Length: 77
Image (cartoon, rainbow, N blue to C red; front, top):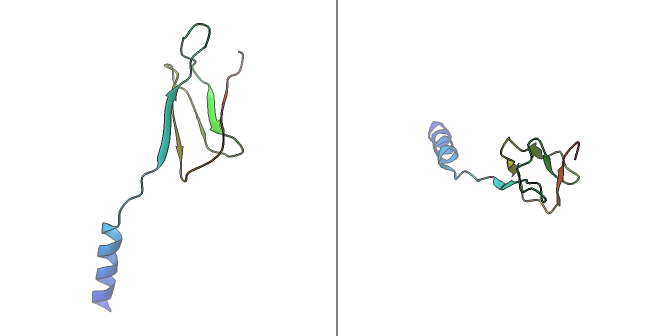
């Protein structure tokens, strides 16, 4: 039993780690080509989202592959 338990823990520790998919990009104003800070970037109909930094850059991660559309919203534009 002890040997079986040891083998289980070794296999568990050596199991491959699945990478998370991510979408990276920039949000810019189409008229001025300047980055937009604080834009909300999220998958439609989900709770998965992020916001852009001061350079307009974002990284949107997902735990599983999603076939949802990506929405980008900015207040005050």
